[in-house]
Image (cartoon, rainbow, N blue to C red; front, side, top):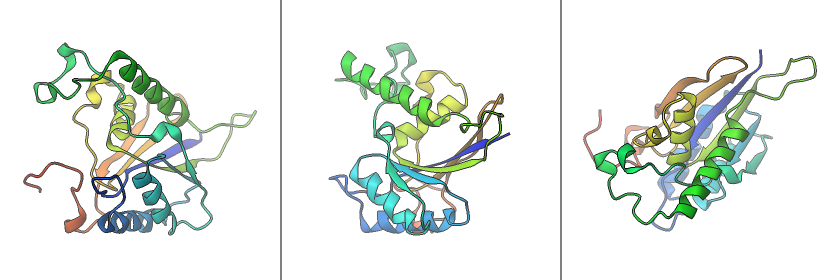
Length: 204
């Protein structure tokens, strides 16, 4: 039974203009070192500059692995919840999202799932190799894929955050529910590079 291994990572730390910072480059390089021991088949990235730069930085540790843009990985709000679904802490966050913007985000989210959240393609005999793919994207698409893997309500993507270059791994096998192997793992980062991309607060 072939397994699709998805290694999801938020881009490295970026500045106010969306460009990768020196810290972001260091984070992406350390993630690349961690992934170097895995037989990665492909690196896919969002079209936004901070994700593009992160993907190419980590790919320096993955020689001969193709690095390709995937439009579905762009930063987007995958689902705009109704008032009854919105936690109090998120009240006001979706003010200004009109129906067209919400529908566009949901279409991207559906395309993301259709392209990546599935088992590998198999041969006519039903056999095929495992695949290992790195997706360099943003916090919201990662939250959406985790929510999908858990078969949770659409609004449950809210509150699932990812640190910059933290690693989330999901596996897909035929006729089985997806397996979340890890979420938001930062063990490849030294203490001073962890928790970037989160609000300030006390950290363990």
